[in-house]
Amino acid sequence: SPLMARCITNEKHCRPIFYGAMVTEGIVALIWAAAATYFFQENGIVDKVTGVAYSGAKVATDISKDWLGAFGGILAILGIVAAPITSGDTALRSARLIVADFFHVEQRSIAKRLFICIPIFLVTILLLVYSFGDAEGFKIIWRYFAWCNQTLSVFTLWAITVWLVCARKNYWVTLIPALFMTCVCATYILIAPEGLALSAEVLILSDCVVHWWLRSGLYAGSAGYVPYKELFGCSIDYV
Image (cartoon, rainbow, N blue to C red; front, side, top):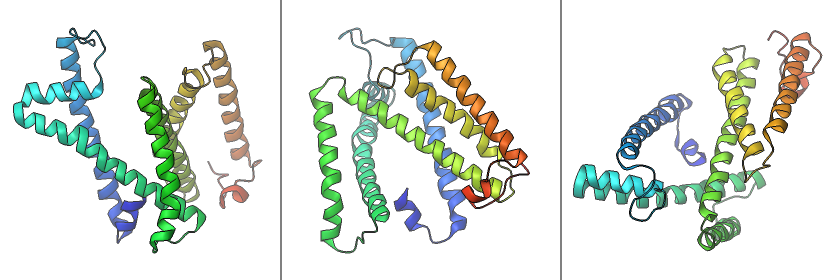
């Protein structure tokens, strides 16, 4: 995040910080996935009392309380309530810094900070009001957020791939994930009800067109027909 990037004093610290954080987060996700799998196997996906499907917060709370008792309840409060609040605070700070950097607005004075913060807060409040007013509002917002988050990773992976190609390094380590994530994000937004809601036939046709375009672009790049040097500041004719 912009906050973490500003706190690093040496570029060599990027790998242990960011890579270590992602590995740790992945381990935590696998643990919760295993716990949720066992929970659903024992209890099903629908609450027998209310007849409503379990929510993520409900599953995490029940798992923490049933398996760890009072201590688990405290962990549930910290993980489900406190952690999202701090994550929201970090997200709003990051959004302010990104907007400030984009529009070249200094952030030393309180007035300049408020100049950027107030519009961001208003948008956030509108999203919260919408989520509270519509029973499905929060789920829809969360789906768009998840898609935007993964789409951001797509652009990041492609940007890193271009840099690795220009630096004549092993670009396959990011090219393969970039292709996979591009397929996942594009497929979801094309067929999801909150997206374009296209039929399977149109989706397959679109995938064929994109596949042909990518193959044509890679062929043209390898043959020297595409001015990659002008686009990216380097030549990748050797790819």
